[in-house]
Amino acid sequence: MKRKLITLLIILVCFLLESSVFHRLSFASVKPNLLIVVTSSFGFMRGKKEGMFVGFSAGLLADLFWGNALGFNMLLYAVIGYMNGSFKRMFYDDDVKLPIVLIGASELVYGLSTYACVYMLQGDFAFFSYLFGIILPELVYTILVTLILYQIILHINKKLEAEEQRSASKFV
Amino acid sequence: MIANNGSNWFATFTIDKGTLDGVKVDSNVLAGSGLVGIVTEVGPNYAQVRSIIDDASNVSAMMLSTSDTCMVRGDLELMSDGRLHFEKLPNNDNVVEPGEQVVTSHVSSRFLQGLFIGYVSDIDVDANNLTRSGYITPAVDFSKLQEVLVITTTKREMTGGEDAGEGE
Image: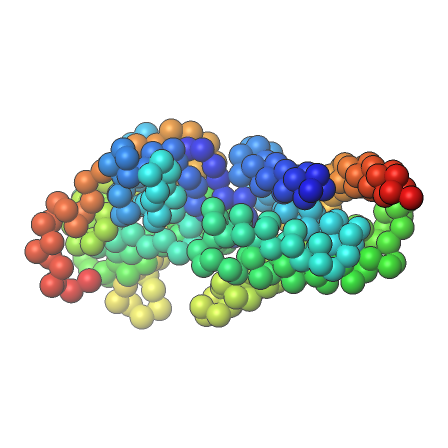
């Protein structure tokens, strides 16, 4: 129960930060995508199911407030969370390369899918200008933010796991 | 304005007034002296506004001095420059120069007439020789929006719904 509340709180905080603070901190008018970082982190730290639920809630928030069609972001983030969850076995606490690679890949998939569904299907084929203008700058900025945000999420996860281990051992 | 869009692909924002304050869908939104956008969704205490620089936004506009109509569209590629693209301006004898003021036209079904959009910065004749197109520098700085003004009377109310049968 406590884990669910804390997870929801992290998603909410990142969502609020993205809506307000990061608009001012935008670099070349590009903002980082914190919800992708949160979804991917929970995905490969906790597995497929939890990654999927985190992705679903993050995407739901994004769709309700920012998107046009309800369900587009929801589906995309849920799938990204699920895919990241399949990397759980390769994940070790002190490794920082795998998280960055996974988060970068997730961000790229998000950018390409958004372009493909929202712009390409409407006949807007200026792919390279969007690639260099939006997708790549967002990727770089998100990876920079990951270095900080991921450590915070990892720290919170470790503390929660330690508490759960302690309460599990009490039942013996 | 209480929240921006967190995604880089859209330019919408949320304001803290809603149906309880008289805001309706299709209410025009201004800031300073220029047009900012139009309300797309509204709840009791909030409303979502789509800026005119958003890729999905189209505004029917006209040149102030000649009253020639054109379409002002937001474009994702120009969003970071803060510019707008306009097209379908008739290629007639009326001279339109950079610096010309662009306002919303009287034939728009969603925007009230005469709202200031921006200044023409570039203009070219299209390959078909029938229309002209170019770029507009908007009057409003979209990266620094804080407070906006919402006109609660929608165009449909002002025209009394009589124009509903005429062409879009």
